[in-house]
Image (cartoon, rainbow, N blue to C red; front, side, top):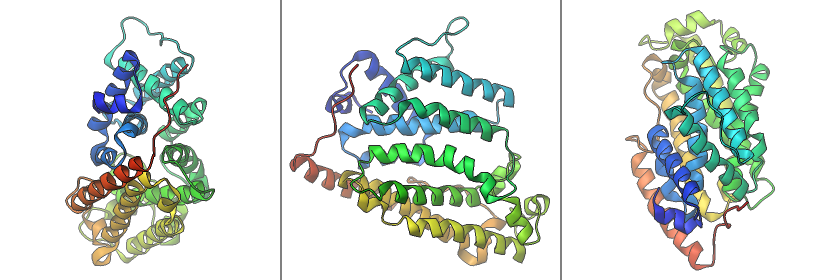
Length: 334
C-alpha cells in the first residue's frame, strides 16, 4: 500500500493511516499470491481490500500455526478478539505488561478493520462470530457428515465471503447467493487439494460418510494419498468430492456479472483459478492424489500470465469507470 492510495481513499488520520499500512504489509507477507489481486481494483479501494484479506489470512494463520501449541493458538484467538472489541469501542487493548509484537499487530489490524467495515456498511460487530467459528474449528479434527461440517462452512467460509461481497459493490439481489455458491466451491476444492497436508496436521475435511461410501476410512485414505499410486476407491471418492465442488462453481458462475465492473476482473480470475484447480485434480485419472502439489495462486506458473492479463484489463476498466464518474464511498468518520 502507498500513501497515495490512502490519499485517494480519503483516509487522512495519521494513526489510522499507520494501521492501514501495517495491515497491508501483513497481507503482503501472509496473503501469498492473493496479494496481487489488489492491483485489479481502483487505487482508492486497495486499502480496504488489503485490510479485509489481511484479517482473514491473519486469523486463519493463528489457527493453523503448527509451530504453536493448541493452548497458545486458543490464547491468540482470544487476544485478537479482545483487541477487535476494544477497537469497536474506540478503546486501547489492555495487556499485562508492555505490548508484544503480536499485540501491536492485533490492535493495528483491528482498528483498520473496524474502519473498513464501517466505511462499507458491513456488520462490524459480527466479526467475533467468525473468530468463534475458527475457535471451534481449532479443536475439530473430522466431520461425520457433510451436514455436520455445515457450521464450519457457514462460519469460517461464508460469513467473511458475504462481507467481502459488500466491498465488491453488488448490483443485483442475486449476488449474495451466487457468492455463497462460488465461495463454497472454492472451499471444497481447497479441501480436496490440501487433503494430504490436512491429514498430516491431524485434520480431515472430507466427511467420514463419504469415505465409507467408497469403502475407505481415514487410515486407508492417509496411507494412499501421496503414496505415488491411488486406488480406484480413492479416485471415486475424489471424483465425488470434486463433482460436488464443481456443482457449486457452476451454480455461482454468474457472480462476477452481479458486481460493479471494477470488482469483476478479480472475481472472474479467482473463479478461473479454481476451475483450473479442478482440472489439475482430475487430470491423468486423478494422478494428483498420488503426488499432491502446492496450491495454485495468482502468482503460480500456470496462473501468473492470466493474472498479468487480468491486471491490465482491470486497469482499463477502472480508468473508464472513473472517467464516467465512479468514485468509492467516503471513509467512515466518528
